[in-house]
Length: 480
Image 1 (spheres, rainbow, N blue to C red):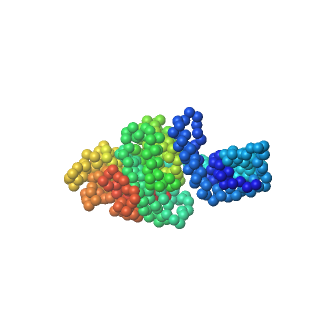
Image 2 (cartoon, one colour; image 1 turned 90 degrees about the vertical axis):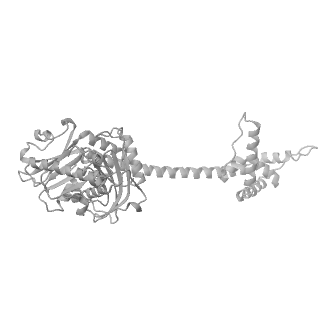
């Protein structure tokens, strides 16, 4: 016996939720108790609207054909009534009830329900596997980084030249690297590419002011907030899979050189080593570097002093950032070594200009090096008439260096090399330095491509940071 179209239509209306799930279409929500009459009417309208759209679909027609076939095979027969015929309204519902109880119908529904559930389970398992694989890789990377950060706690501030000697063979393509520089309550993020010949191409730059409640005079007060600031810039510059070089202002470090024969032991606990530290012994972090053959009894030991809490606060922040770290280094010593390898001067003088102080490094190639801190920087000399005020600054610096040299019976060199963020504030692009001073960019220590106008991201709070950019890329070239 065949079902007519009205019968099937009423059946599908009654079972619309099952059919909708099979076809993958949304269905109007079920009626709830205590709903207002108007809401119930709107739900009914949506149900009929859905039914009309389903009735036009190809899957709907296929279902009708299959249901008709099943009922024929089951030989559903209507009940016989004595002297009484079913009304038009009663007859379809009687047939639908029989159809719903038929074996073929149940097998049909179960088949598609199981099929849908099976596909859903497969999809869930696939997603679960992908996430499992993803977190497994993260876990592995985290373990590797934690091993690295453990070594970073005992940071080696001087031995960055060893990167050149022990570096891993590079890929043929350029390596993308991020540089973070902090000084004068500003933090600069640089995205760059460096090739096998140490040619550097700057890809993006951001400069952000850091409030005192995040970084105080020296130490990071809020590592989580600084890490969030850093991660925002790292994501903006697309550095989330690149190694980082962190460079700190020269004013955070003091440098002295000892003869090995003058020290009882080359450790921070040695009396002479402790005597040169500007910090309390408990808060002092010292790093040593032999500047000549260790077999020679009179070998020189370069020593860098810094605040232990400062370094710990930065390593804690880097652990939160959780990216590979090339090194955490002071700015001036690495540039001093690069200069000493490229000039034929017996003695070298380098100044690092900051906003409120000036660091002076005096030394010789691969030998003695000492640092001195002058209590003034660029901030006092920045004005509308830079030609006059900057000249006053450089004259004052030269006088101070003369006094330092006289104390050790040494003469002033013909050139004083200049770096630092303060240099960008003291001179305009078309200005030259006073006689006796030279920018390190004039030495061509590294080949750099820096075109701010062609960059997608070049956001600064300073008028210019060209001197800082050149200094940082020089440090990077000495580290990799």
